[in-house]
Image (cartoon, rainbow, N blue to C red; front, top):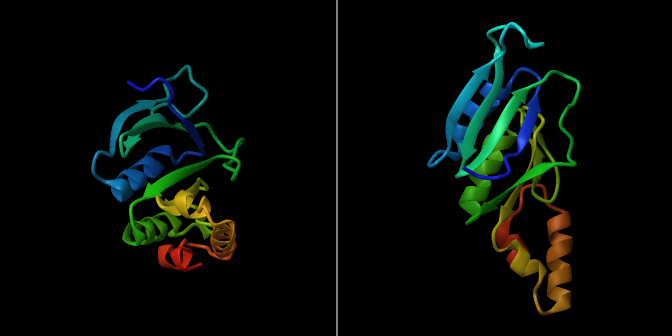
Length: 154
């Protein structure tokens, strides 16, 4: 069991969101547990209170807490992508009915912010040639979904 589990506050869509993410990430992603509001709790008795799920081996908890605390970009989930195909697939799946942003950031249909990042980006941004690193940064800042080849070519 991991020591720290991020808890994501949803307005009634925690189970739906968890199922959506599990379908996108596949592999070792799955729903681990679902708990329900009881009579003594403030939510509707029998409705989903929490859902614990795993995405690529990382556990999360979704809490149906209500509309009081919507998601903001202050917290995001950063996904390390092996290649452009993975960037493209995750970008398309997570941004569907959501909102695309810049520099590899997007908001999904539930309002959760994601960073879809090729794993070679940190190396490109830390290139020993400061001019090359600066060109890479400038190219990245002009992008929505990140284009690995364009970053390499910068």
